[in-house]
Length: 163
Image (tube, rainbow, N blue to C red):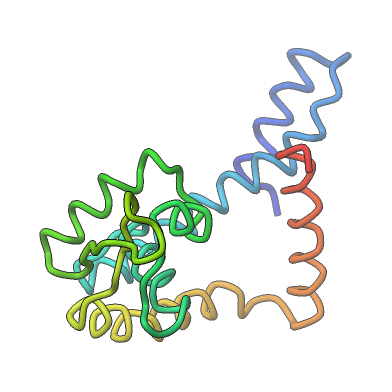
């Protein structure tokens, strides 16, 4: 079953036959798959007035456990976003009443980000449908295939980041 990436590889084979472009088969499909997955997830998030970054921040706060508050630097690390993006996202979520900022009792100069009741209700409503969307996407793979893919993606991720 030929796909868009196969056509790209054929074109390179014709234009640059001396160049081994086989890594493009993996990276191209990985990139295209990531875009398709992001699109499916975005449709689910949109039903709740969220985007991926807002969902990620709210989910990170929820999974941190009661009292659902953490320092912005920990939020950036745990939500897999840059520290420079945190403030902007938090401003938007705070404006919507989904998070609040409060003084950090352990650091007089620092703040904590807290999940509000409205934020908790929203993330609880969106979480199960999000997981169902992920399940629908991954259902084509057996449990064993999913485990293999997870391991392979961990290895690729480590290679890409130099870990």
